[in-house]
Image (cartoon, rainbow, N blue to C red):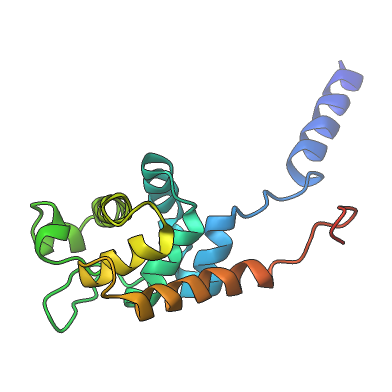
Length: 167
């Protein structure tokens, strides 16, 4: 009985304290690097919207970082709301208060708008980002380049895994 209990306790100890901590997802890393350490709680909402609209989470984080610094309570000069800075038709019928009070709704609605603009503008991410900002496919090219620069800077800042072909 003592041996069984000792082995059980040893196994529990190794399981709980001897294992490595869970690695951060790229979305969590992007939120930490582009928005600050206090923004990682948004990762599940970003990942859900990214899966639904077929974007990488880093893309949505870059949009939020550029638009509002990932501030869910941000209000723009023209009345844009939430971290994705949505207004007018981009809100998809939701009020500003609904978007600001619900991170999942805000991020999902912003991702939906980006996906719609990407399709309307011919399928490319840069044109989609341009349409997201200016509502015309060619109107927000400067904005699109800035968001793309954030995405590129994030990926350049990752170090390869030890033992990989890239290390």
